[in-house]
Length: 70
Image 1 (tube, rainbow, N blue to C red):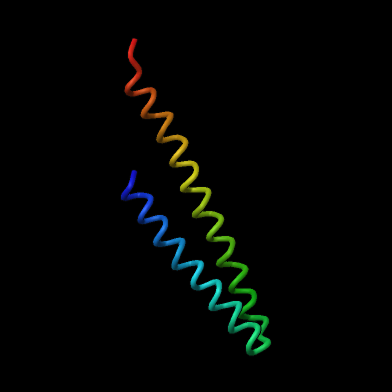
Image 2 (image 1 turned 45 degrees about the horizontal axis):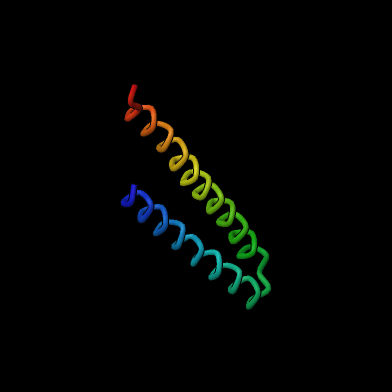
């Protein structure tokens, strides 16, 4: 799971950097296009966060069921 966390964290970090860059460009140039791109990227970060959360929870559930001792 540690490798998965690093991969998801790296992808989310790149998206967050892109969001900050998009909002900065949008504010600097008063461009609605860049602000819209920042909002779309923000939605992708939420999807990544939910994917990570669901994988963590269901991974624990699966691990508990697999290692359950009778």
